[in-house]
Length: 262
Image (cartoon, rainbow, N blue to C red; front, side, top):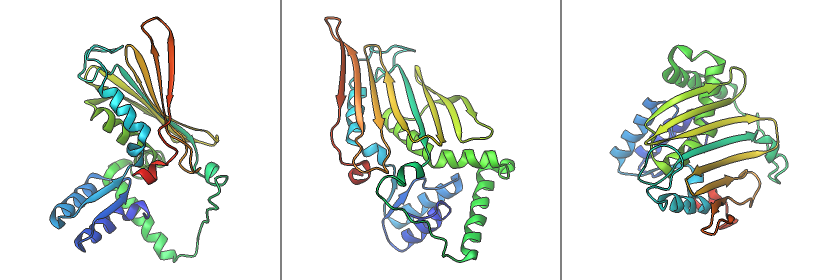
């Protein structure tokens, strides 16, 4: 758990020292770094575990069971797919972390008593990784913001999306704000699409969810901020009963947070 620029460097050092590694997401900020960690893991015979805690929320596991149990023809949009999903919405529009940590009883401290050259080295590594990932756009502040957003907040969402439905076939559309960390993407899956929107603003709301729209039901997984202890992750199922009644079910498996479960 350290600055993003050092994830690859320190992970490789630990593997070469014969240690298992639990590394905070994102594992690396470019493909070369990811390849380096994978090669070091294979050479060491040890295990690298990347911390994507949203996959371990009990409500997420319940939603996975529901999606996998959808009937082959129980879809609303697109062609048939083996798990019966129709279309998917992934949303993560949240207020900045400080809006929650400052009121969450954590009493966070921000330290500045470190050597000037240490911060200069971190900035140098950061720019080096931007250049490897972004090429000619590495010096553009907008491209840097987008890359940071993808590697930090968005990595949680895309990890959960892949765990739930696998890898998409391609990207149909992508847009980013020129001046603020907002982005929308449309992914093509086999027979349906996934709509993704992510952004950080100055509103004290944590609006993060994954919703699957099938022909006969809607399954919604809702996350709350992890910076306030004990807020549950829930699953909401909307469906129509055989007699025509509308049904709404909320599943709250536990108050135990996803970090602890992971």
